[in-house]
Length: 100
Picture (cartoon, one colour):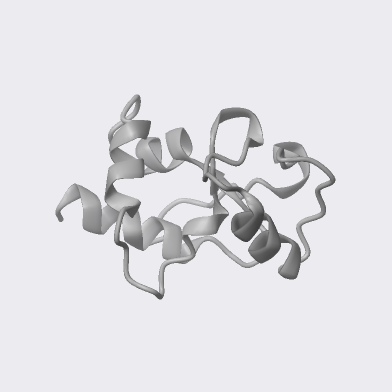
């Protein structure tokens, strides 16, 4: 499967109210250390891909301006008072093959 398509499928599998990091998605796709490639795959992604559930390392919002991403996350119950989301509380930790 093409890398970009695999990335989009992984992000589609992230449940509402949970988040992943770019690096985590890259590792799940089998390409650790390719976080930037995940960002490229999200450019112009289809509307069914919850792009806003993908965060930078440490849970930081990487979209500029961040308001729309934060609004969408808050609508799903992700509580944040800053532009950083608690990965300890909201990070998705999938089981084996749960996103295939």
